[in-house]
Structures are given as C-alpha cells and as structure tokens.
Image (cartoon, rainbow, N blue to C red):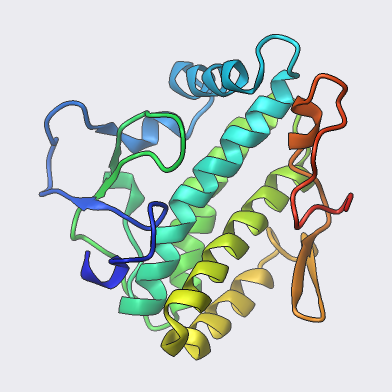
Length: 221
C-alpha cells in the first residue's frame, strides 16, 4: 500500500483479494486466541530466547509485544495517512520468526466520522483485545499486557513522526484519543516528551541470571 511505503518492515503489508490466498498464507485470527498456533509461537520465542530456563510468561510477553507491534504499525499508518482502518478479521499472515512476519490485508478497510473511535473498535477492541484475552492465560497481568500495547503503539508513533513529519498534527490527535481509552489510560507517562511505560515487558528476565538489559521505555530504568 503506497501510503505505508518506506516506513519499514512492521508497516509493510501485502494485499489480496477477498477469499483465501494460496499457501503459505494463513488466517491471522488463528494466532489471536489461546490455541495451538499461539502456543507454538510462544514456544518458538522461548526457544530463541534460551530454552526451558526462560519463564513461559517471559516468552509469552515477548511474543505478545511483537504481535501487538505488527498489528498496530500498519493500522496506525493507514489511519493517519489514509483515514481508514484495516479489517483484521480478513487478514492473513505467515508465521515466521525474527522481526516482522509477513502480513496481508484486503482492500476492505473501515472508515468512520470519528477515526479514533473507529480505530478503537476495530483494532484496540478487536484483535488486540482478543489477543489480550488469550495472553491472560500465561500469568501475565493486565498491566503488563496493555503496557506492551502502549509500548508497541509508541514504537509506531516514533517511526511515523520521523518518516512522515507532515502527518504530525493528525498523528498527535488520534494517539491522544487512543491513550485516553480505558484500556491504555495510565499505562505510560511522558516526561519532557519522553515515553515511559509503567510496567515491564519482562525481557530482562530472559537472561540466565534474570538480570538482563532493560528496554529504553521500561519502568525499571
């Protein structure tokens, strides 16, 4: 999609016509529920992080953060750049590890008079809420889960501000509205313009001594 061109791998999407695209594409909703596909992805993340000594909840949190970033980035880019929101119920993916997995959308985007409300309904309270319900079964608190979403949203905002400065006013407006949603309110602060979440994604606990590096936006730094 032209409006997302040049924004990096987490924004890049393919397109497909309505209906089932050929293999290796698979329906995105399969990874949004607590089932074999999500559990396999978390297990793969755990193996990459270091294996059985890594707590399952740590691997689940890292997998969640990556999924949230992959869903939020193109959605925010389309919302700010084109005034539409993707319909993730008809999206497809390829379950690869290591960065942004391939993602494909139809052209059946959603528009509405209140873009932030449309985004909330079809992204935050759509696939992200569905994923949140699934991750609750991995001993991750709601504070961590929605903190991951806030962190992923901020990552997308950072890219858009740098690469599309002409979108700044529209971006600021929609993000302010999203950060006021009950799901995201209180998940982070901005000190002198710097984003800092009020929770931790637990990545530091993947180190053998449970004392690895902290992320730049972590509450523990």
